[in-house]
Amino acid sequence: MNKSRMEAFSDGVIAIIITIMVLELRVPHGSDWEALKPLVPVMLSYVISFIYVGIYWNNHHHLLQAAKSVSGPILWANMHLLFWLSLIPFATTWMGENEFSQLPVAMYGFVLISAGLAYYILAQILIRHHGKESEIAKAIGRDKKGIISLIFYLLAISVAFIDTRISVGIYAIVAMIWLIPDRRLEKVLQK
Image (cartoon, rainbow, N blue to C red; front, side, top):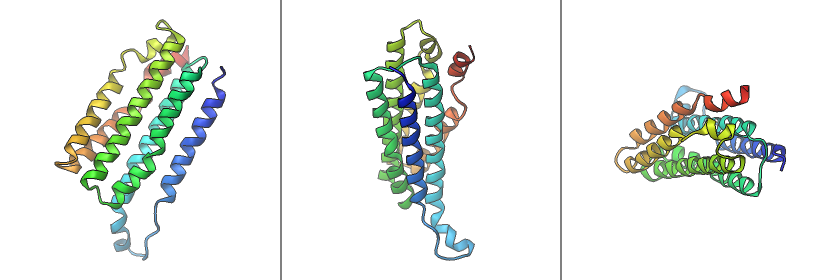
C-alpha cells in the first residue's frame, strides 16, 4: 500500500493537535506584567507540549520517509499513535491550569509514555513489514533511546506524587534527548 495517504492524514491530525493546544490559551485580562503571572504554568505546559508534538511530527516524518510501503497493521499502529498524541492537548491544559499539581502531572506522563509506546510499536511493525535486514530495521536497531525514554516516563509518573518539579524536569530531559531527529533514520534517507 502507498504510504502517502497515511502521511497526509497524520500531518493533518498533528496540525489539529497544535491548533487545539493554542486555542486553549486564554488572553489575560489586563495589560500589565501582573496579568501574565497566572498564565505562567499554562504557557510552560504549552511550550513543553508544543516541543513534544514537534518532536513526534519530525520523527514520524523521518520514520515514514524510510518506509517503502504500509500495510493494514501499520495503519492501525499509526492510528494508535495518533490517538495518544490527540490526548496531549487535554493533558497539557489540565496540567497547566492546575499549576502542575500531582495527578495532572502524572496523567501528562501517562499520555507521554503511551505515545512513546505507540511510536515504538509503530516502528516495530514497520520493521516487521520491511524485514529484519531492511534499511529501516538497521536504522532503528534496538531503539535504546526509545526504551530509555519509556523508563524515564515511568520514573516521572512515580515521582509526580512526591515532587512534580522533578517530573516536569524529567519530561524536559526526555524532550531534549529527542530534539535532534533520529540520525539513524537520516543516514538511511541520505542513501
